[in-house]
Each structure stands twice: as structure tokens, then as C-alpha cells.
Image (cartoon, rainbow, N blue to C red):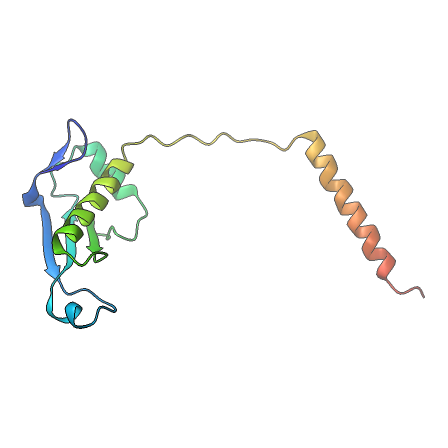
Length: 136
């Protein structure tokens, strides 16, 4: 059971976890031990509240496929259990991140002083470049 918040939990049956061999350096150990974890979570088929599902599907995250399946690969640790915990923590963080309300962006205008400073800088730069020109 993965606890997202006090009211939201995800049963273990909805999370698909497979062990596989890790990539990269590691000598003899990496070739004989399946310590990496490949986690898959189907957003549409899950028991998450509709709000979480909608917000997760809106996310532009490389871990979420077009079909709405979250794929997380954990291979940081040498232990399979540590990698399993890491993958579940990353899934929890991803789901919790959509519950935090985003701040609305307020449109702002440049101040009169900043416009004036920008134009003065442009004229100074133009004068400097004009001095470099050849006189004919």
C-alpha cells in the first residue's frame, strides 16, 4: 500500500514492479544480480481520485507515456530492496506534486524608469559603434 496523503492510497496490486539487471559499470556483481527495478503504474486504471488522474495526464513528463502509464527505472543502489523503495518514493513524489496548487502568473509591465534606462543604453551603444565607422 503506497500512501500518497492522509486520504489517498494506492494498493500494491495497481503497481507493476519487475526486477532486472542494472546497466553500467559494476564488475562481476552487475552481471549476475537483478537489482534494478522497473516500475509501471497505469493512471487510467488506478483507483486514484479523478483530480489526481486529470492532473497527472496533463503533466509534460518523460516518465508518462501517451497511454497514461508512468514508467520509473531505479538502479541507483546495489540492493533490490533499496531500489524498490527508491522507485516507490519517486512515484509518490510525482503523484504528490500534482496536488500542490500552482501559482497563477500575473502579467506585469516594465516600469517607466526601466524603459528609459534601456533606451539610454541603446543610444550609448549606438554612439560607440558610430565612432568605429570609417570617415569618408
